[in-house]
Structure formats: C-alpha cells, structure tokens
Length: 254
Image 1 (cartoon, rainbow, N blue to C red):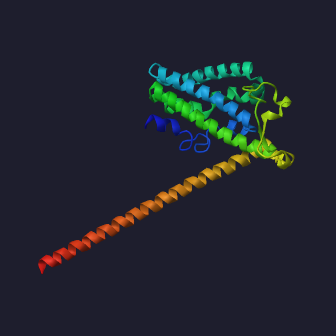
Image 2 (image 1 turned 60 degrees about the vertical axis):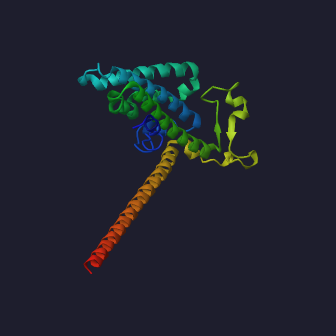
Image 3 (image 1 turned 60 degrees about the horizontal axis):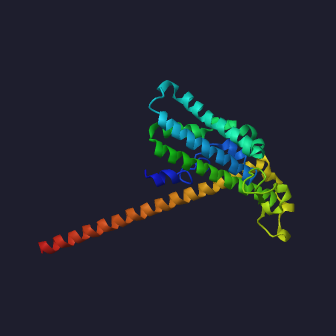
C-alpha cells in the first residue's frame, strides 16, 4: 500500500464511523453542533497520531503479555494531555464534551489502530495511518454535526465552543452565526429541535449510513455487471476463434 493510499483510506474506504462503525459513542453524543464535533475530532487527531507514533517506536520493547495494557497507558497519557490543554485553552469545549474526553482512552478506533497497525509497522507509516484515520473520523463527526445543527437551527455557529479566530463571544456577534439562508427565509423558527437531542443523532446517522450502504451496493452491482459483460465478451471471442479454426481446417481438408 502506498503512503497516499494509507493516508486516504480512512476517509471513505475504511472510514471508522461510516464503514466500520467504530467510535459510535462520540458520533452520537457530541455531534449536536458543528463545533463540538470538530472539537472532538481535533482531540482524536492528536491522540491517535501521537499514540501510533509512540507504539511504533516501542513495539520491539513491549513484552507480548503486557502489550494491550501498555497501549492503554500510552493512549491515556495523550488523553490526559489533551484534556488539560482543552481545559486551559477551550474551556467551553471542555465543559461541553465532559466525560467524553477521558473516554477517548477506550475508543475502539485508537486501540484498534495501535494493535493492528502501529505495532507492526514503522514510525512513518504508523503516523500516516493514525493521521489519516483520525482525519476520516473527524470528517465523519463534522458531517453528522453539521447536518444535525443545520436541521435543528437552520445555521451553523462558530466561536461558541472553539474560541479561535474570533475577537468576542458568539453571543455578542451575529457575524459568527453562519446562516445558510437569508434572514427573510431562515428556518431558524421552524427548526427540527429533535436533531439537537439524542434521537436526532440516531436518525441523522441512520440516513448517512443508508446512503453509504446504497453507494456500496450500487458499486458492487456495477462491478458484477462489468465482470459478467467481460466474461460474455471472452466467451464470444473464444467461440469466434473456434469457428474460425474449424473453417480453416475444413478448407485445408478440401
């Protein structure tokens, strides 16, 4: 597998949420808004990339019988770091994510990449794998969060939980509220508030997974049809060669 394929596999082909259904707890719990989804994704990027690098560096020195506990200690160290940094520099995000920050330690995606990839590959490939899978995970969270927030409010907000690139709190600046419609046609007053609640997470994720499954099935059907057409073409070519050979033999016999 090339480095490019290793990096891009996490977005669609092996997306942790949309394909493997890993990390479903944060996918359902912290995606009520675009910002909280992005915030969780950024934390996972740091933890997964860092833990993959350290696991790959130490893979030859970790005894087989304590391998999994060692990986958990490494991951927990990175989670503790991101928890402290989040509390210091993005306190609103820290409060919003709450218990789901320490729960990153037991995220199946992170432990799974350490076990299945970082423990068997070099540092560069492990770093690329961790970054690619984490970005794919973040992409999935952002898609879910954007859909839920838009359906619930009619717009997207920036600066409420991630206080970066803003000069004042979101409550004091309407410019930080991204309306996808003109004020005269906004659906804010008619938003589907259900999508900001847990049931909305299940419904939004169900429709997204249904779309991905539809694309997968259609691709498999197209590949099967192309393979069938190729086989039929080869059969016709073989039959034509057989007939040509028979005619030639008749001509020689005459």
